[in-house]
Length: 329
Image (tube, rainbow, N blue to C red):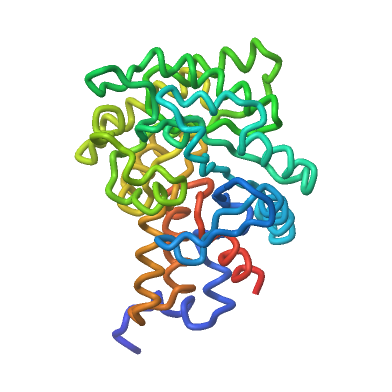
């Protein structure tokens, strides 16, 4: 009679079929949201140096990416504009233009692949010449209520263009409730709100700011309105407020450095939680792979599964098309 314990946990790990059968967490293309950057022009693809493998696309290119997403089983695209310099103003007025880059891209996606969901960013930083997410006073302070009023109008413009999910990323207090009320009042009751509920003032956003053309514009920093990365309990308070104001889903941003926040939000509120695997996270994996320090595919898939294991319903990730192809075998 052997003295070794009868239970050997390695038994179910030996064969690939067995590992698949007992896997506690599953990643599918349906768990992915693909962020895309829109730029002016026609037939334009502009590779982004700080985001290897990612480009800005003109509206016709965005439509093609929508068809690609549909064919890969990716259910939703998130849009971010690279607003031309001459349209960036102190008040970000281009955000309210019903024919701006985002609105044109929404309509192009709905024409090309109507079954694809469209998530749009509600914030003023891609439209302001100073790079902040809202209006600023003479001292550089971002004005909460004045900004929220403009964000409401921005959300309505995007909803009228056909956006399925409005995602306010600005971190102004009270803006979710104001947007929800406006959507109901103006005949858009079925447009979802995915609140950037716990968005941290992170060092991982650099390549994104390059992508939307706001790098180098920012006067000061965003620590006065985005969250302090020392805080976790505050994130729960932010999530509670956004849910009470009418958010359908919530987001934690960035992703990997905040897996503990994702887990706590999921356990506390039992609502759909999303994470944004932000530009700096993506760029680090790309840099490691380029330097021969790791396998890109393996690193990407392991990190995406980590989000799901932590409790995410889905992930915004630049790896979405790569992951979908790998999952398809």
